[in-house]
Length: 331
Image 1 (cartoon, rainbow, N blue to C red):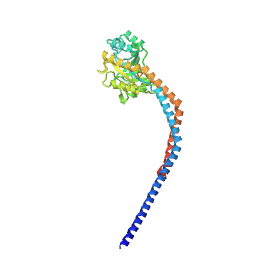
Image 2 (image 1 turned 90 degrees about the vertical axis):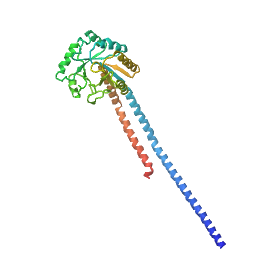
Image 3 (image 1 turned 30 degrees about the vertical axis):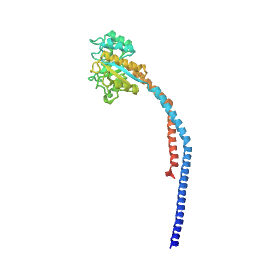
């Protein structure tokens, strides 16, 4: 009985050894297979990288050239923010107070002419004061009131210019809620090129571009609650904004001390190269010059830009194809 038990133990011991050897062999096989698979993956990755690398280097160079082209165009055509100071009445305080304040900083303004708002009329600028402002570079703009219609406008606008003894301006200032984009064609036919609005029809107050031959700058009260934020946004967008000063609303009303502070702030931005204070015609000419420069650069760079964009797209597809070829799912 003892011998039989000893024999069984010996068999079990041998069986255990065999099982151990088999398990060890299996583990060795698995480790070998894993290493082989890992090695195969590493080799495939290396082969993929060898194919992709020259394409990626070409892609990087082309993207860099395209970025440089875009930066050059932006630098040449973005310009800077601009502000127009537009006086909606002809109060004599424009000459006695605002003019000296603005002259100190080299700023010029725009004067709006309309019914009861003409040089020589009681409460308005004297004719000699008006003439001095024009000689100093100030400009005029004609006012379109809410009750105005197209039939009256030609004779009305000529009469305003004649009574002010000036060449008829090419800019029209629309009273709040009076602007309608449907009048643009009529204004162009009449020889006008600038229509100042207050955001009617959801038109933006800050504008950085213009239509061919026609400009739609937006206006807001210079002392409004959001005037400061709008000024910052004008500089950020490198666009144009008109600040109105006058008696149409409490926010437009001229206040000497507050105006002096505002002008000083504008001057600081001008000195920093972030802003310009312009007249309407200067603002339009500035935007036209930027547009012409942009069109010129687009024409100059257009062919090469198309080549770059097409080749970049091709390289992207080639790289995707190589990546797909070496992906585990493709095997």
